[in-house]
Length: 567
Image 1 (tube, rainbow, N blue to C red):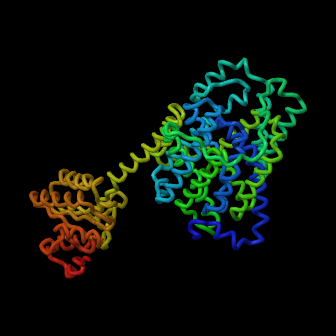
Image 2 (image 1 turned 45 degrees about the horizontal axis):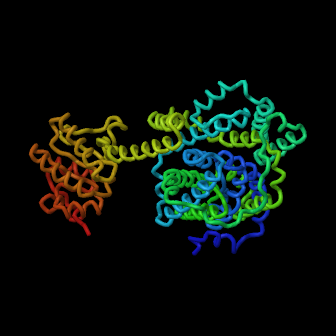
Image 3 (image 1 turned 90 degrees about the horizontal axis):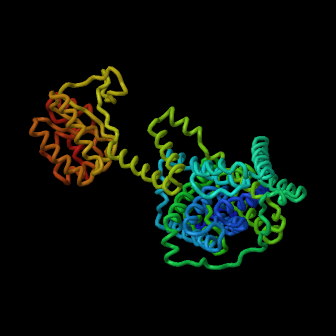
């Protein structure tokens, strides 16, 4: 039961000493979440109040069912951008139809994540290469930042690619609202200053208060500064999202994208904190179930899709959160705000919300990672850049698809062309090492020795065979081949057939094939398929040294009975 209801691990045995940290973290993150949630709702194309809806029930559900004690779930910039991009093609931003689709999207994302968790598909997160994730995240952060340019400049800029937004801004530079620009830039500068002097200070709250006071006392709304105006008061009532098959079909691609990207972001943050605290274990499949139910139940209370966020989680941890109670306290603070405090947001400037988003995503632009990859691995650097450029130039969904394609392509390439090391003997020893990594190794003109560093199956069977053929063509003196098989842990039928054909081809050329250090399961398959038999027993040795010694001395070693042991 504890496996499926993680709160049982900490709630019944809750320590009073943890409350101070949980309370401080809950209040801090809750205060931070109110302006951030409103800003991210605006980024998603929704009225700001929906950011507060998304910061209530989902937080409580995850706190009870999630395996991370510090992860702060709620609206995040990346998911908000995906919502805006995905639903923006189906409905006009901010309309009733747009809002209904966003709520339905939360339900669909939740169902997908929940089913992934139930069917234990959490391992799929490993199939996106790190350079792909870093490249996509950096490009998405740039897109998010430029999407807020309209709020900082105070002019209307239609949706589009980054270069289109820049072009439109320059062509309408004479329409920029100066008070809005000053307010927006001042808010960005103040946020950056607060982050520099003390990260525990809730910068977004500070600039929200300053922005509201500035508009109220200076009458900035009369000078063209856009404000939030009326924010509905009260907690949303339970209601099942309206849907149709056509809506589900249209939203499915973006729902799959958000489900996967949202989990990836959340899981990465959770694992980082797990490594820091080492008092609990983050379970990928349970995280999927927790996030899935958070989105499903949240959609019944007008929430849009949520996931774990980088910045709020860091604040939650730094403020002293020890258990999920911190997130519950944050949610309760947002609920109190919804019930009694929304009227005070009337004079909140859109420029301030835009500034909050811009500063929040600055840290996601990973220039350091690009520099590191350039110096350490040029191939990974170009993967990073191609994903980032495709996301910026072509679009968010296309960038993700390209990233997935690159990741799958890398996986296929790596398994199809595994590392193969030709070996030579270390002088005056029984050890054999890679000839490309060690100098002065002893080689044999008529013996080819190599190690195949992967399982042998359909994807790389040709690579195995081609390596041998290329070596034979390059050296006509080869009469013996020794395969050091210590890393080969499995064979499939394609590999077995390849070995049978290879033996026949080598036999015609009077070349003998030997194996050393063959694992038990592999020996079983070889024996079952007739490759390992009493007639071919001299082809199999316990070690590479024994194989070479056996070839040189033309005798069967006295340990053959042991070699032939199978199930």
